[in-house]
Length: 437
Image 1 (cartoon, rainbow, N blue to C red):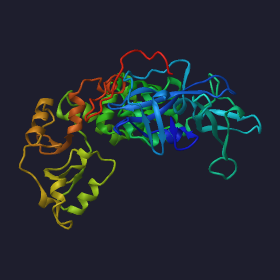
Image 2: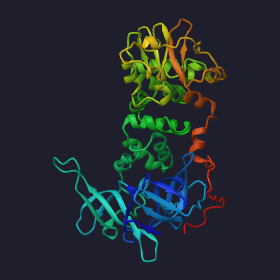
Image 3: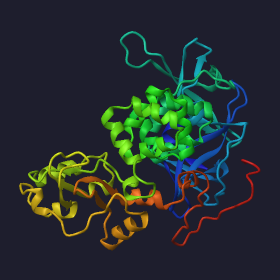
Image 4: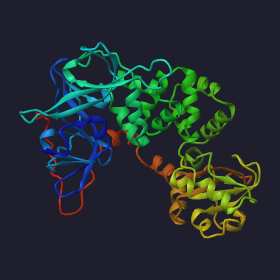
């Protein structure tokens, strides 16, 4: 194995692409797996936790890693596609070692781990050799002093029940896409997961919750105190919050709805009032809505909102006031493609498409799918019998309801790798993981 430097730090490895010998990307680094021995003995790095297609996590032994270069990792291409399952003798560096409270024996300094460095020993094994720690902030300092010390000069890393926060792991999760963060959270040991959830802010936790399997969502919300659970639900999209609340015990659901802001709770209750597997039950209650006097420039400014999904940003819904669902009279939709062809000073009302029938809240999944497919749409308005816009169904809403109920769990846990294209095929092995060597 070769590296561009003698020492590699774990935090810099996370997210790096993993390539096969032909230069085809096969996954991304998500963590390091080590075998802890004692505080003074350098842990052996057994391998990488890699995320491959379908958010499946596999184990890549260090013996399969041929090169760690600036910004990328190369392997032999022979990877076992069996899902990674952590053993009791193994420790995850990012998931379990970051934020541990440790003490530097030579100086008495106490701090928390924010990174570790690994390098190759004389026998060619990779070992953890350095620990980067951060002291608590003192006085007016916003951040505490940092130190990089020898592994043997630190105590507290080999403890079975360490003193541990979640600051640095939360920072790592904050840089991930919500779906990737959900996968990491799902894979953490229960106690570590609770620490991370406690440290996440409400908005980020809401984003991650939306990407987790239903069982995980219910378990996490049940563990939160009622006030915080209500705050997190308010940060979720109304349709996702409605689906989650519907899975909770009736008394818990009633308590949380009572604690939510009235406007937020009203949107959720309205979505829950529609029959399951209908347009009303799957729609979003917060599409991009403008009045007929809005300009093209106004519309383009609204769809630039980075919090919108691509499907939500593809269509602007034009209605008479009020402009919150249920709106005044629905006038039509303006597609982003048409808006881009119009002068910014023009009125959005001049770019309307009012030629198609709208969906009704009671339309079935089959009717919704047929409508979107017939007109080649990624989103469509849902209008009640009085002509008021009550929401919009996007193609991702439809897919959520067409896929099996446990599709998120299957995606995280058991979905096989997508077939590779091109001259090089990944060789997979289905035998149990017997040895890390």
